[in-house]
Image: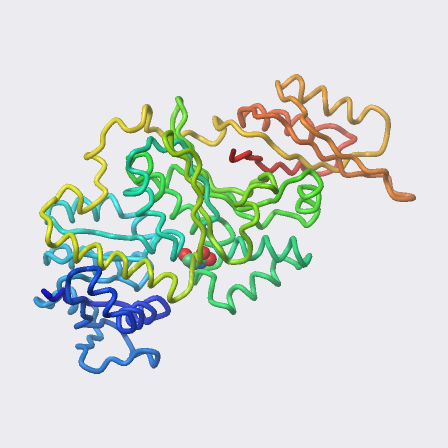
Length: 435
Ligand code: HSE
C-alpha cells in the first residue's frame, strides 16, 4: 500500500491519544484507508511518556514539521489560534493536507484557511473540532447530503452539561462542580469558554456553516452562559416537565438564520434531555429525514482521537481521487442553500419562555403581570405559584409563555420589573420543544 506520512503537532491529551490509536489499530486503519498510514514526525515542545516515539522524527519547533518535504498530512493538535494558525497556513503553503481538532481556529479563521487550502488544492478536515468523538461533521456533509437542513440543536460542551447535570441530580453548587470538571480535564484552559458558551458557540458556527452553506460567522452568533441558572430554576423546570440544557441552536427561518447558544428548557421526555454528564448530543432535522440524533463522548483523549484518525483516513482516501472542489467545505459550491443567509439578531428570534420572578403575596399581582404580558402579545401557557411559607411575604411566580418574538418578551420583562410588587429582576430562560 502507498504510504501516507503523518506529522502530529501537539502531543498533549488529544495528540497522544491520536498517536496511540494510530499505533494500536494500525492494521484496521490502513486497510480502511487503502494506504499505509504512518506517523513519521511529531512536533512537540516535550515528549509525552504515554507515547513510544521510537523511529519518529521529533521536532521541538512544530514549523519544521510543516516544512518537512516527506510529510503529507499535518495534524494540528496544539489548540488556540496563534501558533496553530501559523502552522496550518504554513502547512497549506507547503502543499500539505491538514487535519485539526481546533474549534476556535476553524470558527474564527476557517474562511481564510479554507480559501488558502482551496487555492493550493489541499484538504482541511476538522471532525474532532465539534462534539469530540461524534462524527457529526460527516453526518451533515455526507449522511444528510440529500436534505435541506431545517435546524440543529446540540449539547456541545461537556463541561457545561456536567455542571448542569450535577446541579440537578445532586443539588451541587456551580463553582464546586466546575472545579471538579477542571480536575477531570474536561474544561478548556480558560473555563469561562465552557460556562459562558464560547466553546459551544465555536462549535455551533461550524455546524451551521456546513448545514446551511453559509460562511463561518462567530461574531454574529448570540451567546449566553449558564452561570445565572439557579437551583430553583432547575427544580421548577422539572415540575413543569422540562430539563434545562445548555444548547447551541441553529435554525433556518424565512427571515434569516438563528445562531444562538443559551440555557434552554426542553421537554424532559426528549432523548436529548436525558443526555447527562460530559456526554454530547446533536439533533439535526432535515426536510427529508426528519429529526436525527447523534450521541457520544464530546471530549477526552481517545474519543477525540477517534475523529482525528477518521479525518486522516478521509484524507488518505481523497488522495486517490482528484476532486478539488470537495477538499474544503467551501461555500461557493452550494450557493443559494439558504433563502436568506443573514444571521438574525437575538431580539428577532422567536421562542417560548420560562420566567421566574419574586412577587409580593398580595391581591392583584398576578393580574398585573398577566396584563403586561397580554399587552405585549404574550400568551401564558402555564403558571406555578406555591403557597408561601409561614411568615414569608414573597413567593416565586413561574410562568411559561407561548412562542413570541424576543423583543416583545423583553419589553414585557422590563415593565414587570417596574411593578412595586415584584422584587429584583425577572429571570427568563428560552424554551424549545425540539419536536
Ligand atoms: N471543553 C470542551 C468541553 C472540550 O467541555 O466539551 C471539548 O471540546
